Length: 94
Image (tube, rainbow, N blue to C red; front, side, top):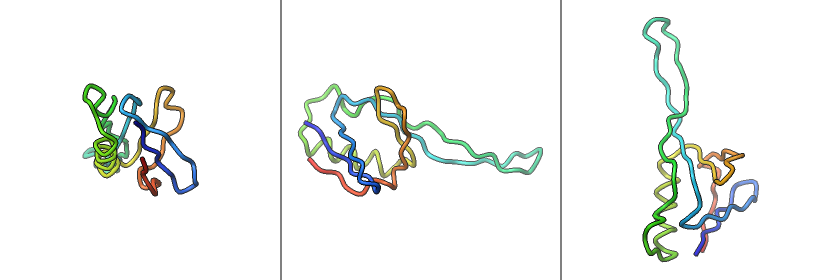
């Protein structure tokens, strides 16, 4: 079972329950010494979505919806060569 993620540029990514994923949320802090803002990406996830369970396509779809709604950026393994903005996902389909 797999889910196809279509991005705004029409690129399609295929995700299944064993696909390695990484995710980050953009954040910032104010450096108290300098008063400057420091921006960085906080790691939120590094693993697979529910790899150890018997999933139905609907379960994986719901897991991806939650994953994407709580992250700003994500990458798909095994090579993680590209990082995608979560907001660029326009559709998920079985």
